[in-house]
Length: 171
Image 1 (tube, helix red, strand yellow):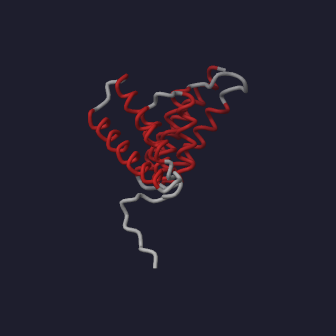
Image 2 (cartoon, helix red, strand yellow):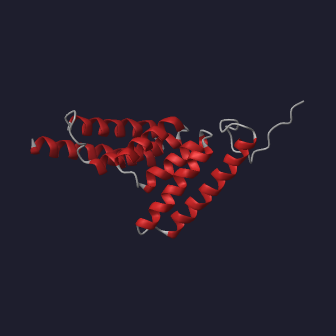
């Protein structure tokens, strides 16, 4: 069992490392495939009903795959992966930030602002770089601004693109 688990973890880490290289080379689909395989390997090492093996590794792989999905504008999949990661580790700043970005892109501006706010609260728990905190504060401000515009129009889904773009005037 220990040898099998060690081999599984080694293969999982290898696929995750290869996925990083693929992402950096712009091969996002290959990165997603390798990260999906890494998650499958982690799943195969756990028995149903037992706690997740290597939860921190699983969170890292899910957040990495969410980044690929964000890059490819596959926002619903990014949101799902981040939610899965946050179900394991609720104070993961990367997961909160990426889910917030996905939600903002999906027009869920107020939920995005909540994610950014939670990430800022988590920054207080960890020794977080000031640049990350500033980015989160700016993302939260933008999401709240867009969310208020959505409320004015009566629906959070009313605007599916950022309001800073000039829209054609109706004729």
